[in-house]
Length: 205
Image 1 (cartoon, one colour):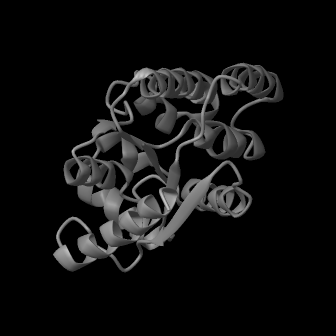
Image 2 (cartoon, rainbow, N blue to C red):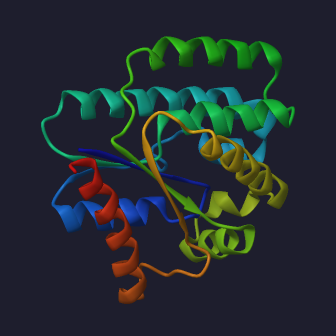
């Protein structure tokens, strides 16, 4: 099995991925945020570092997909390669934070990779509005994330809404997390896991 968790910055993807990995005794493929050498620079100057950042993430995600595909272990993945292209790179281009030449180069690279990518068995989208995202980002206290602009988060959310509404690569589940705290509230955690359980069981029915 391959479950992928998707959602905006601060929506709770990594936390849920870890919880599900523990719940099902699966492997967790987590996003290499802390290892990305461009992230802090990007939030300081998005236009200058957008291409470098996105290529790094794209390559990292492609390696994850290859590992998942070759592994015989069920895996829960924190963010997908589709989000890199259809959400983050697309948002940077539409916001004039990535120029047309760099975006075309990025798209060519993505299209070469995607031919070798198998979609997840289940895609779980964590839907969160801006107040929830800001609250979560502030709680985790990453210094470089202090520079994230609200309009950047809003634009990403709009790209997520458009993408998830047309997602047709496999089964997907939307969970509105605005009123949920699946870290500290056991009832909320049980609710989320029950919904994912139902989808997983449906794959075998």
